[in-house]
Length: 337
Ligand code: ZN
Image (cartoon, rainbow, N blue to C red; front, side, top):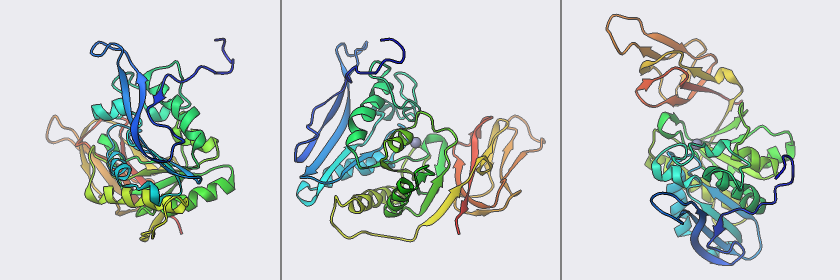
């Protein structure tokens, strides 16, 4: 196909369930992937569609990064719990978008080393991760009205639990996003200014005019009871907000935070033994030491201090006990009036 020609190649992915059929369907997105241990094999990505009649469509995803667990847990539970008779509209659930990464417990796919959240719009004739992205881009996102993508920090980051949206050029779309984030009702709500948004699922959905809610609900390569509960409550709250579920909404106070720019991030400039000096959720002042990196090879050397660049609260931190140069050590977010 010549460069610049319209892309009309069909997706190699087929769905074992009918997106238009009423009722509860549990099935798979089947992506052919022939390999040494499975000639003519396929990647089977779990999918649930719960639908009753006409109404809004919610597309709910987790496992965009494979080492983040609140999304897959809450979505597996939601797929089993939703009763089609009590819905109006449709809920499409994919608990682990980057299924090969999820099964490997890795952020990126073990098949092609691609980060799902950097390959959009994907390619029908690309790598496994690109083919999955293309299916979302051309088949699932277009039918959705509201999209929730549950992230956590993964193995190398941990966050205070928040739902997030991006600053958007269209203020009406931005307002719908703010309303959906408030509906999700995590302990914190964040307005993100994305510095590297090329290839993100978020950007793909937003460019189609969809209401898009993302989250960071914890991290460290595991889930906690409290953060799973936040994911479960938030997903139901968004379905209620979209008019798909009719039940009382549980709400708690949420604090709006902003991450206004690069000043929010504290980055390691050397490797070593990481000493966290402030815990998640604590207030920090500009200039305050938030972490130290100690020389792991000898006693008697001076630790390198890392300081917050702005006033705010510690919203994110590096997790493993050892740090390398370039690691995101701390994220400071600013409470909004
Ligand atoms: Zn993630």
